[in-house]
Length: 485
Image 1 (cartoon, rainbow, N blue to C red):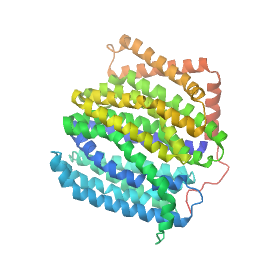
Image 2 (image 1 turned 90 degrees about the horizontal axis):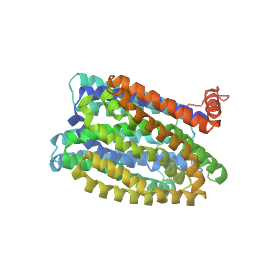
Image 3 (image 1 turned 90 degrees about the vertical axis):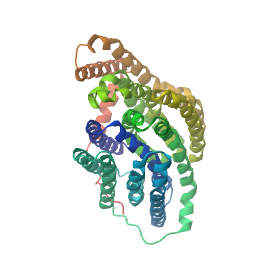
Image 4 (image 1 turned 135 degrees about the vertical axis):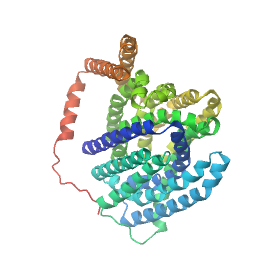
């Protein structure tokens, strides 16, 4: 598991670094309206894409005693579904552009819809790699796709393609991901489709898809309402702040999440081992994510000005508010992963339904007061459901919540103290140096403060960090197996 985490960490560090650099460059070359239009179009594409990327692929990772015939049925079903959904996007694009008063949506949506069959071609192979915890090929796929898509997007932006630069970036990423995935896997689908095999996967897949469907409203209803009521320019400012949240969340949670589902699924029958692994994962997630989100909150003005430019200053208050939900997401994602691994995807579905309803209601109320109010509604809704989330976790794992929260107390307290230290000392230097140096000084103060507090409070942390580093860097004694047969 540690080696899998190591590959996932390497993949995410490199791909997110490249993705962030590309995003920063594009914010200098494009305007808020371009980002807003693509964010608006992505609301629709991400809605249909979850039917391809969730459900059946997760059922393959979680399922027991699956055979090649199961994988064949899953592949052809997913590919057929992706083609149907792409056709529906093509047909619906003119109506979406007309009714939402954004004519350019009608042109953008069909091209973005091409990403759906591309996802259908690679989703099952990716699930097989995750199932057998072969994360090196997944890392290669992600890195190549991110770099290739970034090069295409920046090149098109420099040539004056405007909003189409973002479309080209997404499509190039998807095409390269398909090519690499098929290159690093030996498994190939055969011309057979068993309805019996599909029924074996259907129950779990339907609950996962339903949860993803509801989670879509949790995460994308704000984009739709902002775009509809406030327009693409305002949505552009919101989308930049949300992009930072999403990038940090993926960077900090995706490595652990991709490994955790496979690792938890293997421990279904051993609840004691399951609980121990879960506690370690949650504690590690808190130590890595809490200081990052509170640190960004403290230095948000300098962060936005340096990375994106002062023309994006309207994104600063939104980013600060969204960092608070990042704290919750950085640990709570493991709750849903644990429920899926234990076959309780239906519990997650009903929980997500409640969150989706309160989110949409909050967004509808808040959108009239601006994008900061929408972000605040998102944060309040998330924390309002925390007690229910913990109750589901306690019931599924058979654990007491108090010991679990105690494991998160030190990283939380140290992160809060760090943020307070940065904010209290910020007035001493913020007016005297440039934004770049202010960001460096604030980040340095935060890093030192957090490290000192944690090491003084728990003397085992330095030894644990050194031990973990040696285990991740130790050469593997087993031959690599980059392919699935």
